[in-house]
Image 1 (tube, chains in turn red, cyan):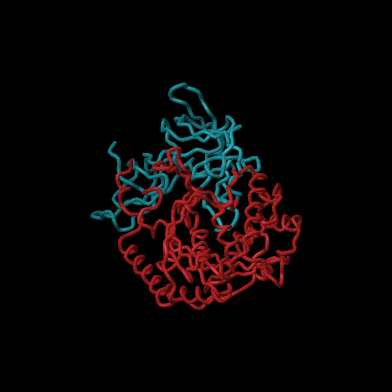
Image 2 (cartoon, each protein chain N blue to C red; image 1 turned 90 degrees about the vertical axis):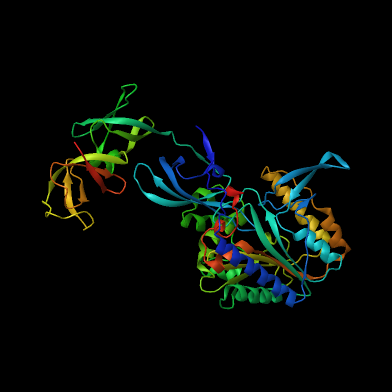
Length: 324
Length: 189
């Protein structure tokens, strides 16, 4: 075993600045009367999202002699929504989130997330607030805004919302992605490929950029747009080749939410992935009534990477996975 | 033939692409928070030597390349082929000019080289990291000069040219780092 692995992967000066940034974030929310909350890292339910893999563990103890499967949370979203439904009002949380099979320059399987919810806000009002926070931390210019469709059309002469699978395949082949495109049957996979590899490097270079109006098929937990059912009220924030935040005008309809969970499980079945039981505590909370709100999750480690100009996530966390 | 999943991707892994064995130089994960993960891979095609970027959908698999590195001693060249021998089995392997590439200028008889073998034939040869070669040509240095003045070019017995300190003379044997083509030290005969 390498005897240097006891040392932190970030230097102490970086960790000091990291602490200061997190303090600034907390201050930002205290000044706005947003309550700080904590929710469980271990939960009895997980997410159905076909692209997320949770860590599982087992609790054994009083009342649980048989063992209880628990999932490390991929984000605190469901628990925070239950708080909103219980009448918390505006809340924020800084916590660890856990995602299996994710590791790289911008990914550590355990990472820090800032998530907050604003009852009464729509996603545009929330973008304004995110913009202020980002400027406060990164000392950058205000963010620009662009729809998913125009970001795409600026580069490819095709409407991503109406393009057929065949048209997307042709586009992908033109970019050297024929090894992926040839056998792909899912339009969203090709859209995500083109967006991550070709569009993303061209946006948000000088200042942060919000992309909004994502395709309805990639709505996740966002409302479908009332004026244009082809898009969802979902946005993402990009800056210098980094995906910083993902936010929604939150879906508040419990039945619709349950339907999306079930659709995910159908896709999981097609993809031969394990089925994930829908989180009925969330569904029941939504059925009880969650206030109309907008919410966002922001990767704190990535924000700190940008603030301190670090190229690898391990340079901003005390002990990256290989030293954990 | 075995397959590798993208989860097994790492530097040095060898797999087949477009009918040619490739070696991974760098593997980077690209994953949107909500969406499909991809692997952006920088790789070297082992026959053409070309370096390129290729993107894979995470979870996909590629065919492993039957590529093996073996340690063989250099024997001689007949002008067309360079002959190597396994010092344990005495089995001989002949590599052509293309497989040798730049390594040709570092070949010293009996030195053990690394040969990359694909489907039974050598496709690349790496000389040892350090070789000892005789200087066949270099300007006489000025008396009293010491190392650290930038040096002078010296031609070695294999035809390779490296920079050496001014005090190093013709017919002397020097130690060279083949990875950087840099002089390391004089070797006493």
